[in-house]
Image (tube, rainbow, N blue to C red; front, side):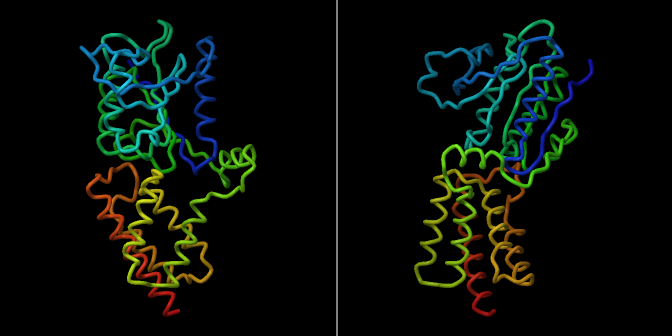
Length: 294
């Protein structure tokens, strides 16, 4: 049997990757002459018993276990990796174990050969998660994945996924949200990083180390990922008017040398404070030094 193709929609934030993915699923449903309706539910992170747990079944342990929202249709189960925090490996193991259990939860009818596993914000997947997906793709010709990602697909999944570029100059999702909510059409993280750059580059105090630590934990409490931190710093550095090309290259060098900054990898919990503090203290000192010298 031929391997069912998998696809990855790659593009900047808010460019319409999810919209295109759902349009693909809708077209597939039309091809099979079945209704396509997406409904939302809750996934319970429970240990499958005898490999026969049903993802739609709420067992007694469900009320006390970790949960994440997910979407489903006749053709797919969809999860947002960003909602899994640092537990994506555990959630994915739970999903794949039930997916390949004795009860066939992947096929809604005999006319369907494949039910897709959809993962939004796939660039947040870790090494262990991509290894699990690679194994599932290699073992089953009926298993396929659909991804949305802001970064190129990692090497482990590149051979299995056809990458579809999605261009976009503005964050459409943010624009719709702020219009509906009556808010300023600005990504507050861009403002936050630009203001931090201005503060760190103009002053240096003995309490800067503690300030940096407080700043880091503020980001962590809001679930800002390491790869996103690097991207926001890059944007802030390019936006700062006082930064010359030569100064920019020196600041970028700090980011380029930062560990685990390319996505698809996990910064282990005990490494997070060490990594974040070392990079940001180096960045803060260099910003102040370069601006003072200019």
